[in-house]
Structures are given as C-alpha cells and as structure tokens.
Length: 324
Image (cartoon, rainbow, N blue to C red; front, side, top):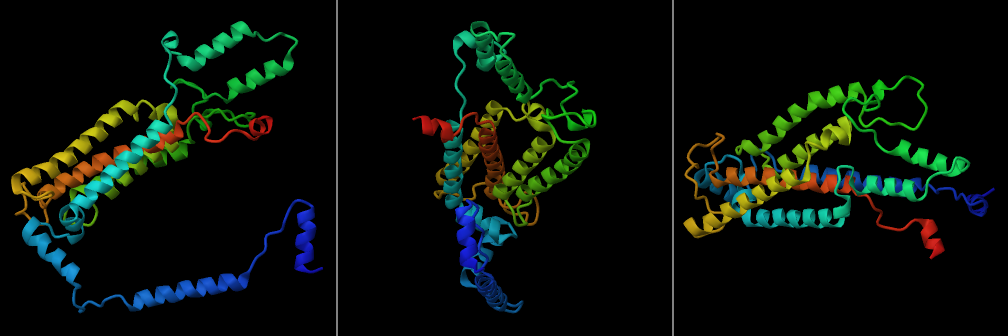
C-alpha cells in the first residue's frame, strides 16, 4: 500500500498520519551548518583591526566614562536614550497586561475577608440547598471544593511529601516536594547574587536589563517550589508596583538631570568616572543600570504573576459557541 493510500485511509478514520520528509530536513540542516561555518570563518582574529564603531565605543568608554566595558557604555551611555525608550515600552506592556488580567473589584456588600467568591458560594447554598436525594449535584459540589487549593501554613496537604503514600487523587499539594524546595532554597541566593553582580559591576558585560530578568527567574523558581500560598505574601502587587514606580522615576531623573546639568540627555553628571574597574566606575551609567534592575525585575514580575492569577479565559468554551 502506498503512502498516499495509507494517508487517505487514516484521514477517513479521523487520525491522519504525519508525513516525514527526511530530504527536506537534510537540506535545511546542511544550510544551517553552512551558515555556521561561514560565520566562524568570518570571525576576526586576535590581530585584526577594530571596526570603526567598536573603536569609537572603546575611545568613549575609558576616558569619558571611566568604564572598561564598551557594551555597557553603548547601552547606558551613547545609546542611553534608546534604552530609555525600550524601558518605557516595557512599562507600557506591564500596564497593559495588568489591566487586561485584573480581577473583578470586590463590591462593598461583599467586603469581608472571605471575598466575593466565598460570599457567592454562601448565597448559592442558601438559595439552592442541595437535597439529600440529589447525588449528582452533591458530587459536583464536593469535586469543586476538592479542586480548590488548600490554605493554611500548617495544613497537612500543603506539600506532596506530607501526603500519605497511595493517597487518591485529586492532588491537593500547593508546593513541590522537599527535594525541589531544598534545591530552590539553595539555588535562589546564588542566582540572586549573580543577578545583582551583573548590574553592579559596570566593568563587566551585563547591566540592569539582563539582571532584572535573572531576578525574575529567582522569583519564579521559588514560586514553582513553594507555591502561591507561600509566595503570595511576598510578591504582593502594591509594593511591587511601588518599587517599579521608583525605578521608573529614577531613570527619568537621571536622564533629565543630564539634560539640565550637562545640556544633553544621558550625559554623565556624576563625578564618579575616575575610578576604572571599580563598582563606582561609569558615573550615571551605574545609577541608570541600577534603576533598570529595579524597573525590569519588578515589571516582569508583575506581568508574569498577573498572567498566572488570571481568572478568566480569552475565548469562550466550545459548548458556549455551539449554544449561541
């Protein structure tokens, strides 16, 4: 039987068979290898002359900014206004995501500690109590309560290693096993120090933008290991938003003061550019990078956790579409 006949038979059965084209894959792989070889051959050797743009960056970095890393000089100095624009594009994206994923505001008559969802369940039980003979509805409500996360720091179902072996589903654990939590607890301080180092040491490649992404990774690592119940009190929206605002205000102040004091946006108006290869090298570059660290880490944290906490779907369910 030919491949076309097999495909037609599977299509009639509702399960089409995927077609594999090794010849096409081989051509694409060969093209990728050729591009990599061409790129390696074109890499300048140690004795090659610097391109004009690289020479200009080196000449501006050490004498003008007291910084030995030309990449940081370009990102936060010569092209600092571009980084300024990119940062506030990120800020606009954060505002958009948090606005679209926001929860419904609690009504005044349901302002208790249980929240509107708990008040709605109480109202449902009062208006539509479950009859003893209605086993279907009772079973559905029990399953709904079982799927709700368990609360309380001392709850025996908080972590999977506290559940007895052979416990039936559903899984109630709000955090990972003791092995995962121990690994996360060990790795988080190391990664956090590495992220801060990227922003603090201006004479090495890095800066606040990648450092902020590293700190976000630390927060996500702890969230994956310990769950929302443990990380919720730490990653609260109001203080994180305040920190993000502080980072944004710091960036604006650095740029505007350069314009007012030196007559140019992103100008080095701090007298700290005379100590190369130290944490104080770079003048406003270090202050700019530190503000970027705060802005990017908090902005990304707000975005990710707003998506994780989203309580509604973007598209209706299939049965709702069919009914309409």
